Image (cartoon, rainbow, N blue to C red; front, side, top):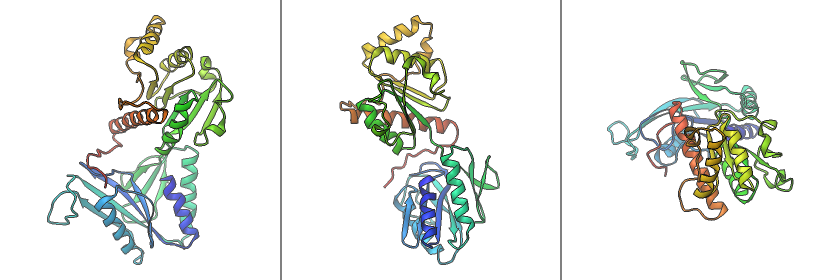
Length: 322
C-alpha cells in the first residue's frame, strides 16, 4: 500500500487520472487475497499486483476502460468454469475487485495520499475504508461494516541478534517482504548502519541487557545468531522470558541440546523451549549465508501467514500466480 500511494502522488503530480484496483473480498483459492492492490493509469499498470494471470489482465483492461468514463466500479471474478464470465482460471475461488477512480484535478486526493503515507510511516494503526459506491475513501481507527475496510500495512518487526554474514543477506530479504528490521551486535564494526542500509535501526549493545534497548511484543519476530554460543544463550533466555511471535535460533542440533539443557536448568519449561525454531529455517539443505537467509525468511513467511490466517486476515493462496 505504501508503494501504491507513493506512486499515486507521482502520477497526480504529472496530471494523470488513475484507478486504484483492490481485492476487497475473496473466497476459496485465489492467486492473491483481500488487500492486494495495483494502481492503473492510462498507460497501464503503474505499481502493485493483484496476482497476475487472467484476473490481473481483465482488471487492468477494465480499469483502463473506466478511466475515460471517470467512474468507479465493483466486479466479481469467478475463478472456475462458469456460464457467466469464464476467464479461463480454475482455482475454484472468487475475488471481488473494487475499482476506485482518482481524479488528478481533485486536490483532496494528494492530501489523502499524503495522510495515509504519514500514518504508515509513523506506524499508526488504522484502516483504509473504500466506499461501496465509489465515493471518496476515508481513513479510520477501526473497520466499518458499510465500507470495504483494509488495514494499513505497518509491517511486523524483526530483530536480528548478530550482524554477521547471514544477517547481511537476511536484512534486505526481510525488508523486501514487509518486515521492519532491527539489527543488534555487540561489536561496533558489525553494528554499523552503513552495513545494513535496509534496516530500520542498527544497535550496538550488550546481549545480556536486551531490555535496555528495546521491548519485544507478541507481534515481533526474533532471530538469534550472535558471534558466540554464550551470547546466543543470553539473548534466547531473555526473549523466552518475554513476548514474541517467532523466535529462531541458529546452530547445530548438538549446540541446541546444550543450550536447552542450560535453559532447563535455569527453570525454563520444555513447553517454552518447544516454541523455538531451531535449527532455524526451513529444511532446504541450505549451505551458504544467502541460502540460509532464504530458509529463515521462508520460515518466517510461513509463521506470519499462519498467524494472519488465525487472525482471519489472510486468504488461502492455493492457486498459483502466473
